[in-house]
Amino acid sequence: MTISGECFCGKVAYQVDGELHDARSCHCSRCRKAFSSQASAYALVKPGEFSWLRGEGLLTTHANKQGVGWQFCSRCGSTLCGIVNSTIHGVTLGCVNGDPGIELSRHIYVASKASWEILPEGVPLYREDAPEDA
Ligand SMILES: [Zn+2]
Ligand SMILES: [Zn+2]
Image 1 (cartoon, helix red, strand yellow):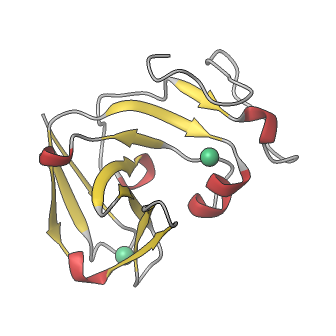
Image 2: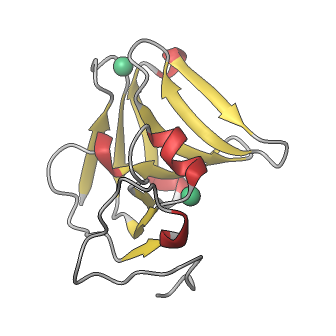
């Protein structure tokens, strides 16, 4: 399966030659800021299956001391992917084009959700983190 994604302005685009894994939504305050939203929507990729199609030079990186962070389009601000030590770790589901064939399998850190968010029903909710295979 081939999955593509791009930012809001379309200047930055990527392709994943494979499947997305472990789609999750994190409701912690840090993810709210990073995603400018009520929660993250994020799935893992196998690093060797990810490639930039265009606009890689427009990316801005924000990472912590441990090398964990995000990459954004410097033109439009879309958050495109997560990185660990400069290697692609996963992609933001909001920038994926079409149906990636995966659904959010868990909502984590819901104890930290925003006061204004109403949590979805009928999905696995975890007050904090969840095991990787949840
Ligand atoms: Zn853009
Ligand atoms: Zn989070």
